[in-house]
Image (cartoon, rainbow, N blue to C red; front, side, top):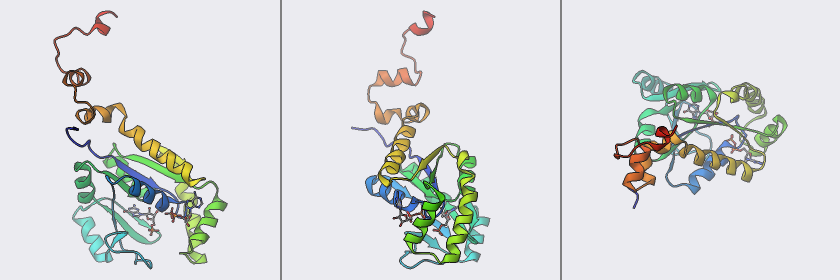
Length: 227
Ligand code: ADP
Ligand code: 5GP
């Protein structure tokens, strides 16, 4: 029996619109029931098929500004002329319940999260080329020509921020990109600092735990004694 759930991982994913971020995050959420998508607040009107509370919390500008004032957001930013923000209480609640939380936010927001939450894992998804990005935006069929041009221009700005992220994944083949994403998440869970914080979840042997966490066990430290 596992003694408790390890504290959740805060995973931030950014990518230029059309790269495949929604597709990849849906795959993660389907495979990992303990992962939670953080539903952002936005002042953007819903697109056909979008559901309030599932895709976004759609709110008025007045309500959004009130929430900023009340300190409700972990981060917020203006993207494509609309306001977007991540609910602080929703994220902290899920992490404390041991859920991994996935944020799909833009680079301005991602860097704010890293500042307030250095433990967060920032992943930037790149398209294989700008030409392919344009093709995917057209294939998705949700934007007008004017909006596509605007998104491509902003994509160049966003890509300049990719070096500030912890990881960069190219979404060429969807299966390969997904495998890369999963291996990053797995590796982060076993980073020694995070592993030690959650050691009782993985290890039930009391002596082993004491050795790992530097607890007293009455034995001489032979590595040090022999050096
Ligand atoms: P984003 O959320 O980054 O804006 P989407 O997930 O909506 O992007 O993907 C944009 C379009 O590209 C969709 O039509 C999607 O099916 C397609 N797509 C996603 N990943 C790939 C891939 N690796 N190869 C080809 N097409 C892809
Ligand atoms: P869309 O309107 O196409 O759903 O999203 C536009 C952009 O806003 C995407 O880059 C998306 O990642 C970003 N975004 C969505 N939610 C948030 C949020 O809560 N905060 C920030 N900073 N960006 C967000």
